[in-house]
Structure formats: C-alpha cells, structure tokens
Image 1: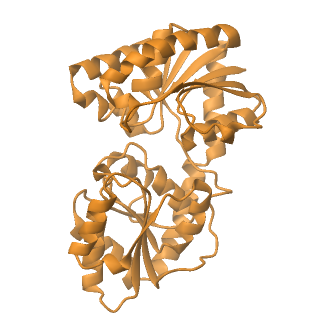
Image 2 (image 1 turned 135 degrees about the vertical axis):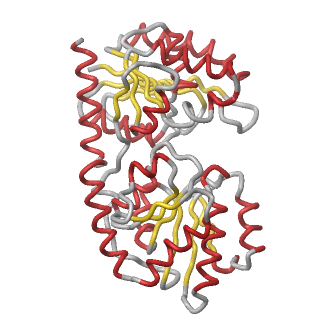
Image 3 (image 1 turned 90 degrees about the horizontal axis):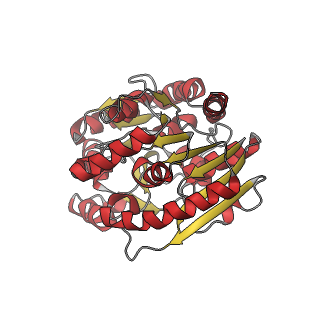
Amino acid sequence: MKVLLLSDADSIHTLRWVRSLSQRGCEILLFNLLRCDLSPYDGMPNVKVYSCDFVLRDSAAISQRILDKIVYLKAVRLLRKQIKAFRPDFLHAHYACSFGLIGALSGFHPYLLSVWGSDVYSYPRQGSLYRHLLTFTLKKADHILSTSHCMARQTNIYTPKPISVTPFGVDMQRFCPVPATDKPASFVVGNVKTLKYCYGIDTLIRAFALVHRHHPQTDMRLLIAGTGPDRDQLINLCDELGILQLVDFLGYIPNQELPKLYAKFDVSVSLSREESFGVVAVEAMSCACPVVTSDAEGFCEVVDNNVTGFVVPKDNPEAAAEAIERFIDNPQLRTRMGAAARQRVADLYDWERNVDTMMDIYKRVISS
C-alpha cells in the first residue's frame, strides 16, 4: 500500500511509525514542514521524504500560533503536487492543528487523522478561532485515531465521529530490564520529561525535598532528564529547597539510551498536570521500573494503581513524597511492581501489536 504521511520528521514518534510501516512493506512518502535533519530516514526501504524546509524566526511551535497558518497556504499547494505525483492510497496526518489542517485543506480522500494531545487539549482553549479550526479539521477526516481512550473522549467534545484507539507503545526488545551501571546513590528517583510547567517537575522537586527531609540518612539522588524552558527556574527551586547538591539535570538523553537510565531508577516519577498518553510511564514500566504518577488522565489509563506503581493527586508533593517513601521502606517493592509493570506493557502496549492495529485500520480504509 502507498501511504502519504503528514508528520514532523524531527519527532521520534514519526520516525518510529515510518520505520515500522516500512518494515511491513508499505511504500511511504513523508511530508514534512520545518527544516530539520532528515538523515535518520536514509536507507529506509520504500521511504521518501519531502520537506517544505520552512524556517521560523523564533522557537515557538508552528502549530500553536494562528499567524503561522499563513505558511500553510503554501504547504497545501506543495502537498497537492506531491499527492498528484505519488498517487497514495490514502493520506494520514499526525497532529490535528498543523499537519491535520493541511491535510484537511488538501481535499484528498481517504484522509486519516491522528490526534496527539495538545492539539485537542490546550490548542482549542486558546479561543473560538482555534476551536473552529480544530472542528473543521476533524469534520474533514474520514477516520480519526487517538493513542488513548481519554484523549478520544476529549476529541469527541469537538466531533461526534467514532474514534479508533491506537496506543503508542514501546519496543519491548529495546525497552527491557538491563543491569544498572554507575548508579549515583543507593536510592534514585528519576524523571524523563520536557522541563515545562505542565509536566509538574516543580512538584517532583518539592516531593523529593520532603523525602530527603524524612529520610536524612538515606543516600539518595534525583535524576532529571530532558530540556525545556523552565530549566533555570527549576535549578533555582532546588537551590531554595537546599537539595541542589542531590539533583542532577542530565539534559537530553537519546531515546535508545533511556533503558540504561531507567535501570538506575528505583522509581520513575512523573507528576504532569496534564497528560494525554503516558508514554514515559510505559517506557519505564517496560524496563521493569515501577512508577509514581499524577492522576492526569493519560497516566490513570496506563498505570495500574497499587500494582505497577502509585497514582497520586496532581500538585500534591506530600502525596507524591509518601508514595516515593514506600520504595525506601520496602526495597522489595521495586522488584514486585517492576515485574507487574513489564507484564502490563506486554499485555497492552507492545509496539508490534500497536503497529498491527494500525495496519488493520489501513487495510479497512483501503477496502472500503
């Protein structure tokens, strides 16, 4: 089958979809907007990448500002040329308020749309025009896909159409338990997330400070992996709380290196204020690392509370600290919950099964 994907070529999620669909024998044209490094796609069989090579004057996300939609008029014209040359069986756009809008404006059918999270949560909250654009895009789609049930429900606020759930799981061969090396302390709390307010890193830091206060004799460390606009603010918070010497800001960690990092964690803690699908929790659980998460919808769907980890209220460092301390008081809890966590991923979020689900949808779209 011939698939024309509209998606951010610079995203690890796009790369994983393209690689897996290529391995299943699909012929793929990836349509990209912003200039970026396309070398990860080199050598993939039956994969071509077309990039508009747009460049923004600042770093704000192209999908979040109405003024940037002006460039979409040019993108639609370029997309129509690629459709005419490639002659795809269908168009599949990822992320409703950027690539999805371009796909809708192209007029091509069958047209599939995958929502990713902020496109149906934060984007329509910015005003009536944004809600109108989202509603228009969803209306044009022949088939709508979501990575989680909670995000599907959120999407149904703006459309009555049925939505297929296609979880974005993990490669369990890559994300698997490995021996811990260079563990910086006897008890390690870890987090992998963009350093932004919505992901609750500040709540995690406050919770860790409480854990340290309650267990001053325990050799502990907090590892925070990721980059983002709040880095300096979070470092200052650690300094204010007197725990800066116990916290390591690791910066960006390549996806393929994350299993080694999860092996160092006694518990992976993610306290997002909003989460459409808890992929970071799935990755940790696949590595047999138990989790403590907030009760954001995406995490509640992924984590089996009291079995694969603990779910605590958002913006509640006291509750998070109490959950973390349970792993200090009962060291065997990591092993027991870690095993249950990996089994849950095998049952629900094995990447190969997720790709099978997508391929079945593709086949139904073509046949109908």
